[in-house]
Image (cartoon, rainbow, N blue to C red; front, side, top):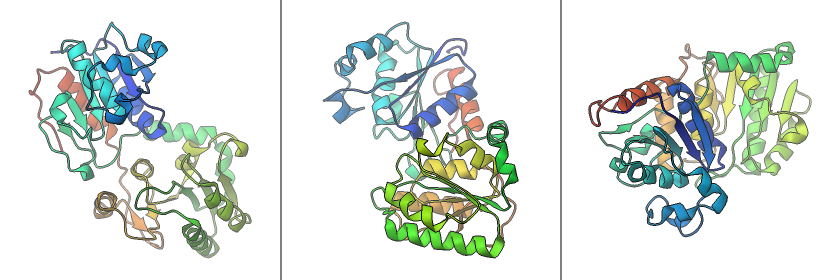
Length: 329
């Protein structure tokens, strides 16, 4: 049995989505935490988390000083690279570190104490927790802080429609044709209803997409944020003030965070989705959380907020003998 009085290490790579999930879980655990951004070198980077032999040599000399005793009581990793280090911590700490891995490590989940994988991954195991979407920090306080940070959005006409842009990924082409189709549909809706558009690009959004949308939507009240040149990122404020959110179909993280807000969430799917993403979309639709972009009436939206529930299960597993707490789907 472990104690929650020790330190929690949050281990990620540079990916913002991985960092948000792991840090959100750590915050809900309520333990003193330290965030380690670790990037393994080849050949460990090629084979993570399968290759652990000599794994401490996977790090540069400076990063090796971070990944050193005293070992933490809990380690939370997110992503394939982090899975290498959370896996290593089990033997390194002689079992005194409870290892939590977020996202399917594509190995036997029994190599970690707890694995958290979204339901559409289809991963099974006695120690696997399966939220509907991805973990995130969105709750009432987070949204209130976002509104405070962007209080001027209160002056924009309603409905305030937040538009979250992702980027192309395998099997999903967010190209110029998609951008024009999205822009036309947003304009048609805004002309019929009035209101404003708050359009946000992500790190993965190609400049060509925002280059098409900026002149198309230029006469509509609101903003288009594509990077630092447009000022500070207003993402929390957009979610906090949104009466409705439109999200491109490519990102589990963006869709999960949008569904955590509690307003209607719409998407435009321009072509058949890859199987795993299709399963995720369908689960959201079946739960009444996701709608087509042309939907005009909505039932009351219950926010999708699973981070606190998952954190409670992890806390129970940490404070109980191994295997004493049943995993929840």
